[in-house]
Amino acid sequence: MGLASLPPRQAPLVPQQWADALDAISTSRSPPIAVICGPKNSGKSTFSRLLLNSLLERYGIVGYLDTDVGQPEFFVPGCLSLHLVDECLPDLMKTPMREPERCIFSGDISSKRDPEAYINYIFQLYDYFLEKFNQSDDADSHRKALLPLIINTAGWVKGTGFDVLVELLKYISPTHVVQMRISVESKNLPTGAFWLSDKKRGSSELIELATVFNDSFNRSVLMRKNAHSMREFRLSDYFKRCFSSSLNISTNKELAHALASIPPYQIHFSQVKVMHLYCQVPKHEVFYSLNATIVGLAASSTVPTSSARCTPWYCKRHRCQERHALCDYTCFSMQVGEG
Image (cartoon, rainbow, N blue to C red; front, top):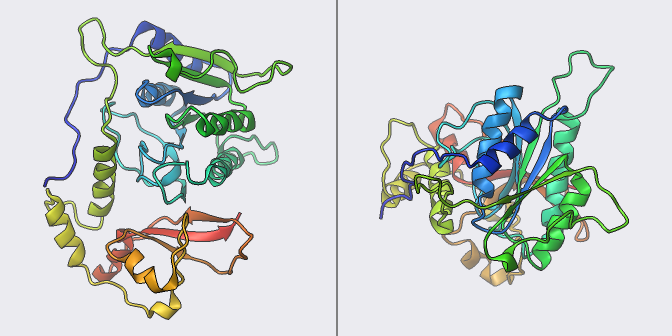
């Protein structure tokens, strides 16, 4: 079976309504913080990528907070990631894998198992961005220019998913909220500033956009996603980075053999603590749970108490000159800290 891939596509013709929205956000007085929300297959990713390119023309560097753990834009599934993008996307139909500025491993392709942890992870990434890239400091004359931020959200907008989105919008209080709407009204978010009570008046500019599936030449302007294929493609791309680009790996079987050829690190199992994020596994079944499983490799300087919530921060990889050290690339390397 071949590795998942996305066929090349021509860039879409931007609908006028979308073009007006892109211009309104990109020409705002201060660096915008824009949240893109809406149901599945409504055009959130397409609009986010168009907005990214538009903002790059003015600012040069744009923050991108990807909160869709199932179908991320720039990194692997199961992670929430903050990126600093400094170059336009040449192909709007496919985004390249990027090393994140900051990333948290959630360990699942959905936020349904632990919505509280999921929203707290988003808050931590957002706070990091504000502190480092979106706050002026008069005492520091060498501080970098303030950066805009795009926050792309998941398509789960009903039930608990709606509650999570409301909490996100209340906490972030973005300058712009772009709500994508589809023809099936029952799947849409409520119109207006749904995240605010009637007594409160927010400062966010709300932009509601209708989904446009085809332009005047009947070409698709949306990226129809196959979630399973997208996840397979991302994971394959991630693990292929273990090897030189000159090594031609075109099938899953070839990738598996290449990974198996890397001499692994060995450590006594007594020195490893296995933590299952969303379930409890009996001690006598731990080995079964690890068999043929992709795991996150973590390092902790402290042992958290059972009541403390840990934040599994992703650690940037460092390629070692020793070939055996490349096995660091075959797992998600994280640092666990109390948060």
